[in-house]
Length: 262
Image 1 (cartoon, rainbow, N blue to C red):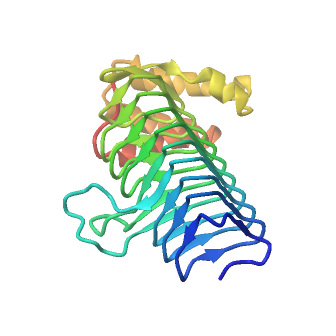
Image 2: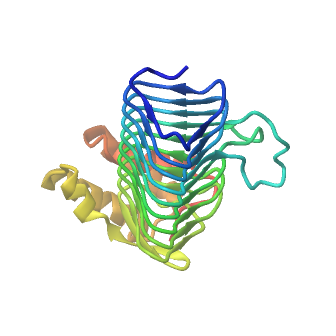
């Protein structure tokens, strides 16, 4: 079903079964396969490929040569009907690749709202991207990666499969991340190591000085106290009673599968 207000270029190919919302534009030489849903106000520019099952929300901008909802590169994938779900108000720049999930995980790759995915960023199968993230040019999110809200992964960085990049953290350019980056942490290098808090990002997102001081104390407990993580966890749990933001660090330490960067 195509809404009467949608504008589709005559050279675009739109298969039967596609759902296109109000005020959507589809540029020339774009291909949209069956089992794709595109929400109101989304702009799909020229030479884009969108395959399903894929759901794209409202007011997104998808630039030329992006490939959305293609089958994944996992060798175990055998054509199962896995999905891609993209939220609202995302900017998906040229040649970005968003692959569908696998049945070995959740079966879905998820991109939240208000994200910027820069040129040639690769989002592999079963990735979960939160809201308000910045995924830089030519960066790679391996399969099963999680990127928290307000996090940044800068240009030419690679995130190893099953790693988590925590909320409000920042991975500098040309980094290789092979373990989890805790929330709020600034990471850089190959392999990536911590360089303190992402203070600029935290200040931009409204964190005030008292809360920043609490996060600094938590960071020092993890990285500079000489304590084991088992000894650090109860200290952070006590701090989180006064400062809920510290709770994200507690969760990161309790739930990590690959360990945290050191």
